[in-house]
Length: 281
Image 1 (tube, helix red, strand yellow):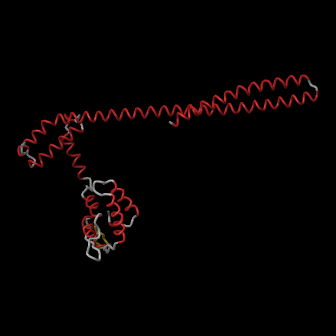
Image 2 (tube, rainbow, N blue to C red):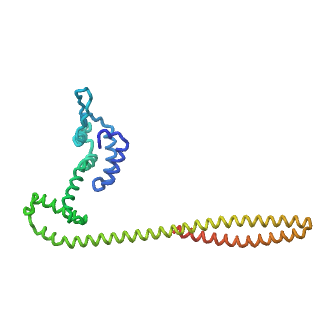
Image 3 (cartoon, rainbow, N blue to C red):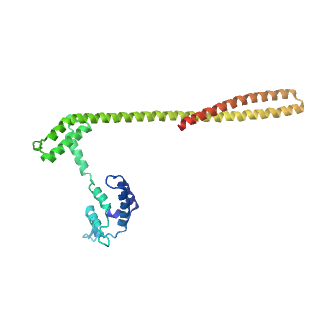
């Protein structure tokens, strides 16, 4: 919104983000117009005197004084086309709404001061609802009775509202408690689901580690079988009966080991497939 930020790329993006967050103020068609009007505003020739005043101090140093921002935008919104039509239609709606917001800490500090006056030592346990109620009552007395309680006009609507205040507060509290319980239930369910997922992921990792170990054992058993076959061929060729017996022991042990490992690998693969199906759900 500041004149010096007019050509910054972030200004256009920030403005559109704010505009999209205000659907009650601007429609989708307005957003399209707003983007176009901001581009026109960026390319507009803006006189410096609309937003700043340069003076020279006693030491010949140039001093720049900026005009109020609402004064600057008043000049911008008065810009017309060559046919005499106001150039900006949608942009003023957004800028004026933003300028109506507090741009300083005064309102916030004033609120803190009022809260401090309300929350005395014997009222330190007041809830937010009670504090807001007291503040609303105080503001109503200021508005309707110029700050004097006895000046506040008593009407039927006021009396009815007072009578119904407790029941409305109770209904509101029940609604908030219900929402809180629903939120807690959703969070608990999400946490339970997350824990189940973590357990499944941990089981999957264990199965992967087990699969690697079984695969290594399978390779070792295959090597032992190959070694047994080589020994057997060499022993038969040299008619070394002791060597033949040793080779047969190696071959028998390797085949037995391979059968067991293949069964274990099959079981491991089945368990992993079932586990991954659960993870996909």
